Amino acid sequence: MVDPEDASGWTGTRWRHLKRGTTYEVIGVAKLQTALTEGLADETLMVVYRNDATGKLSVRSLYEFCDGRFEIITPVGGEDASGWTGADKHNPYRRS
Image (cartoon, rainbow, N blue to C red; front, side, top):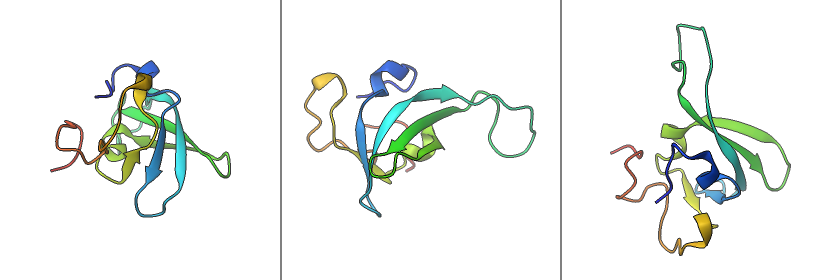
């Protein structure tokens, strides 16, 4: 399983958006820094990722990234990722 606290564990992995079919490379996991009082809280973990086709960078909260809308297509650390997706029942960050 990917450790969300360890950005190096996510860096370089590729993911597919299940609805669109587009693929992305994770650049890393970052902590949001904000003084705003609405929306996401300060130090929320965010996934920074790049669209493989367009090169466009995007940022999404770790919780949202792992809620089942993405599946991993490149294993982390060379492990076998067969069958593991963001919606996997063993993923503690997915929405129930």
